[in-house]
Structures are given as structure tokens and as C-alpha cells.
Image (cartoon, rainbow, N blue to C red; front, side):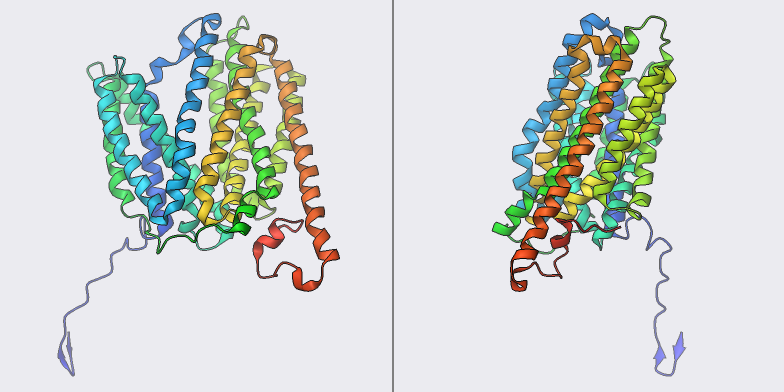
Amino acid sequence: MATDAGWRPLRSPARAGSRGLGASPFARLALVHALMLAGDTLITMALADSLFFSIRPGAARGKVILYLLLTMAPFAVVGPLLGPVLDKSRTGRRTVVILSAASRALVCLSMAHHLKGLLLFPEAFAALVLSKTYLITKSALVPSAVDREEELVDANSRLAVLGVVAGFAIAAPGAVLLKVSFLGGDWVLRLAAVVFATATVAAFRLRRAAGDPPPPVADERQQLRAAGIRLAASAMAVLRGIVGFLTFLVTFGFRQTAGVPAFWFGVVLVASLVGTFFGNLLAPRLRRLVAEERMLMGALLVVAFVGLVAARFGTRPAVAALAGTVGVAAAAAKVAFDSIVQRDAPDAARGQTFARFETRFQLVWVLGAAVPVVVTPLSRHIDLGMVVLAFAAAFAAFSYAVGRKAVAHHASEPRASEPRASEPRASDPRASDQGAAEPT
């Protein structure tokens, strides 16, 4: 183009996708999350033949107990080691994601060669450890990918929904590989390795935090143990226990009930998955109306009510409806809980917080799942099991309400008795979050 000053080069046209996927820190995290969850789905499909559904219920109980113990093992490894690594440096979280994705690609390639051998079991265990490592790290990364605390619920919800969509999308090519006689599960694992390798490349584009987080001070350690976070964790733990309890209650209850068609297992599973999907979609809309704490309370109350109604009818459609309700409630509550920790826990200890709580949640899930396996009358009478589930949710809701009221009362006492100079500063948003005031 000619100007009075002479010729100057034309500017390069802006790329149409400059603000598309990968342009923002959250979009880059979302891409990595979708790839990681897609790889997880392929691993699950490749190992599906190892499930216990093909053996007799009586023989299955011992294997189920062993399976439940094995699901705890990755958290026992990850919990004590991962938290300090994540909190030592903010850039350490990005590095953990890269190493987790790359390691899973290598593990999948190795599993593809040992799908029928004994080495598959330690390799599958390594895949589980790496999966839990990523999920905990992802939770600690979310606050750095959003601009405001009010966006945390929406960000967690979008990641959860994206994970479900990615799982369904990758299931189709995975199923094709399983059905082709000369391919099979080993090629599904090779596809998973490609997906994880892609996630490794994408993880290099995650936001690199500037500087290291400040070391935790005494006030932050007290905040980490804040009653509000502990109460929310207790409520979420009950919901996780209910998920495990209902899963194995239905599994053994249907198998021990004569005349239950096999497709009802699929109906209940689909209801649970659909409920989980809609729970993640619903969470941001609920957050615009109520605070995260009230979302947790509402989830427990809804499960208690629907559990009693389902027990009253005692039919298989009622069980499916309860599974869908539990899926909605647990998904929305998990989004709310993650947002509470991301909002209130200090950045210098956020990784340890998530590692600790996820370990406890998995332990409660295992305990809940073991109840119908060990207490056989519950699996023989599903309606009785649903009553137990409903009362557990109701008791948890009551305890959570009483605990929050006590915290609010305790927080108000210093303001009434101490001089104004000792009151929390109004500019500190956590001063009100720990007390009675809530955003609505």
C-alpha cells in the first residue's frame, strides 16, 4: 500500500481462529481435559472384559471386595506425594499434567502388548495412579484459568460436561476397534496412546504461572482447616458414599432377583450417566440463584426425598429414577464443592487440599459400595436399601445445616464482643464466606 511516506508492507490478516479453541487459558485446559478423559474411556473399554459381571453373584463378592480395595490403592499412592509437588511451585502443576499424559501414553503401549498377561495388572494400576494424579492436578489448575471467583462453578461444570462428551465421542471408534476381529482391545489401547500423546503436546500450551505461590502462613493453615470447607467435604463425602452404595446395591440386587432382564442394568447405568451429564449442566444455573453451600444442601435433600419415594414404589423404573437423581445431585454437588475449595483454600496449599479430600472421598465410596456386598439382606431387598440411602442423605443434610449454623454463630460472636479494630476487614471476601453471609 502506498502512503505519503512511501511503501509499507501489508499487515498479515488476523486468523479466524485466533480467539477460538486454545486462545484462552481455560480453552487450553479444556482441550487437555477432553483428551485425557477420552483416553480414560478407551482404557476402560479395553479392560471391560475383566469386570466381574460374568461370574456368579456368590463368587463375585470376594472379587468385588478385592476390586474395591484396589480402587483405593491409587489414592494411597497419590495422596501423600502429589500435594506437596503441586504446591511447591505453580509451574509444577503444568509439569505434572505433561508428565501424566506422556506416561499414560507409554503405559497404554505397554498394556497393548500384555493384554492377556500378568503384567497387565501392574500396568493397569499405574494407569489408575496417573489418572487420579491428573484429576487432582486439574482441580488445582482451574483457578488460574478463570478471571473471577464467580466463574469457578461455571468452569468446573463446563470441564465436567466436556469430559462426558469426549468420552461418548471416542467410544464410537473404540467400539469399532473392539468389534473388528483382527484388531480388538490391544488396538484400542494403541488409540488411547495416540490420544494421550496429543494431550501431552496440548499440555505444553497450558498457562505458565508467573512466580511461585507464597508459603502458607499461620492464618492460611487455619483457613485450610476452616469449618466451612470441612463441613462441605463431609456433605460431599456422604454423596460419594451414596453413589458407591447404590451402584453395588443395584448390581447385586438385580442379579439376586429372579426374572430381572439383563437390559435393566443398562437402563440404570444410562439413567445415572444422563443424570451426571445434566447435573453438570445444571450447576452453573443453580449457582446464579444460590451459593455453593446451598447447592450441597439441596443435593442431599433431593436424594433423601427421591430415595423415600423410590422405596415406596419399589419398582425397577423407580430404581432407575433414583439412579438418575443421584447422578444429578452428586455431579452438581461435586462442582459446588470444588468451587468452595478453589475459592477458600489458599493457593499455597490447594494441591494438598484436593489430594487429601479426594482420598477421603474414594475411601467413603469404597465403604458405601462394600455395605450391600457385605450386608446381604440389603441386596436381597432393594427397597430396604433405598430407605437406608434416603435416611443417610437426610441425616447428612441435617448435620450440614446444624454445622453451618454453628459456624455462622461462632463467626458473629467476635464482631459483637470485640472492638471494631479487631474485626475482619470488609475487603477480605473470605471473612464473609466463612460466616453466615452467602452470595445468592
